[in-house]
Image 1: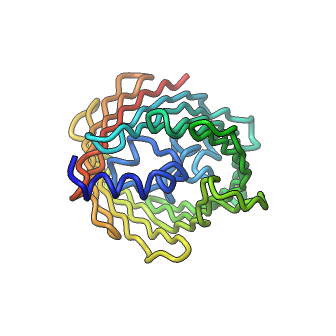
Image 2: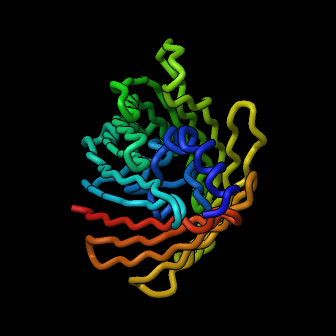
Length: 266
């Protein structure tokens, strides 16, 4: 690994660890999430699970940049509540060799209202342990909303409204994130999505993705994002109740971050 890549990784390890976990099905579509509706909503915009009627459980693993020792893995699920929405639960862990280990719990509740609307709110606890230092925890809340009409979904959510007052230098600090986006289903095969992602003291990031169903069991995904420019590729395989998703984000300097996910719908 050259000097630039090493310095970049050292300077951004804390920032990476503070980012939310993402499902490979959404990562492959340009890391878009605001207008998604489905079983991956607990790790995207939780408002998208408000009208789900089936239980589901998913797990995913990601290697952050092929030549680094940064990796994360997690599990999440949806528990529908009859006529009153759904509960989403997720747990994921971020690791950097023996230097950093971070575990995040997230519980969210989504509910439908006024025919075409849904909303959600959630609570997160992030516990981080650095080498030779006792673990520390931060708490935060999130919220999301979606509007669905025909083939169009418009959504928005915010993450990381911190409830902790500690100024400890080693706590993973993540500025509040705001995401607005839309998705449009052109046909049963083709879906287009786009998000605008804001983070305090950062330029807005545009994310765009496509999903195309080539076969009843096979779906291809692709996307691109700005600030910095990254490319995304993914495929999905579905056989009855089982879904297998493979995706990768591609950074022009640091290379690819491959991800694998498996879901089961009851």
